Image (cartoon, rainbow, N blue to C red; front, side, top):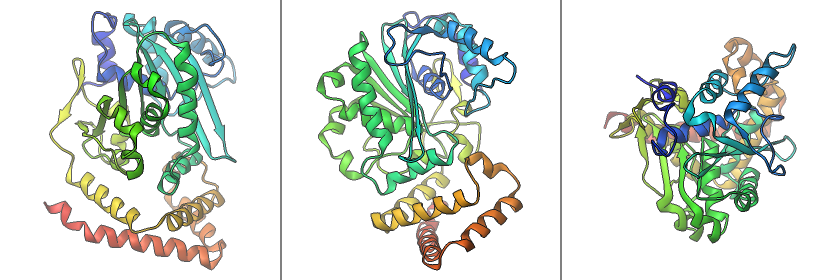
Length: 366
């Protein structure tokens, strides 16, 4: 089945006035936000932007320097920006307002950039969770915090950039980036909200019920387009307050979270009628599990688990791809090193998860 790279070949010779912006363009820009573009794309304080074509040339030049390595989250990211730079549709798009803020003490992982398109719109793209354990820890903090630091950064970023941008706004992102896009749009103020035409949420975690019932969310609800793969896990977490589109992925399980795996047909994503029973089972289990734990117990569990993984010298989710025997050994040593009270927190919380799974087991057979 076709993917976003095929789409770039199909639509690469047509600008956004000739072929209107669509859902595939959305996932391309949401994926572009994952690239580390420090020193290439101007920051919010700089007036001039840079075309994707020129950014690629600088990118290639830096990549060829001995000992220099531009990091990326996904292995396909380097190919993506080069494919964009060589196309008429994307090569002349202007990049600007790039920020990349990571603070381990404050537990913040935030990055965003803006993209001007030839239809005189601007796409404000928020980066999703990177591969760092810190980035995932911030996501898990949503379980017990009403607001996480990245959400506040997302609002401030949109409020800073909007006055510098001419024309209508599109806002979006993948994973946590989609959550940030919705949160920022709901809190940015009515004048900016009026300029937002569409908010794209791509397999992003949701929100608590208080946020879904807020006036800010209600003001933007009809502008939100939510996409999740057929076996979504991350995108089914917490409340969304709106309908969602199920998209076909050529991967299985958690790997469907990867936008590169989403199927494309002409100028749209490939839609499916409904999510899989596995996705519904996981969604129902996690929702019941979280609802049975008060905020204090959720925080205790997440803090202890993060401490254990950190003590086991696990800094990235990529570490889970290493030798399972070595990984398990490090985790068990770290677990045995913590005091008994913390081990009880882990045990008690996992028992609740198993109980919730048992309660929803029949979902797999409906």
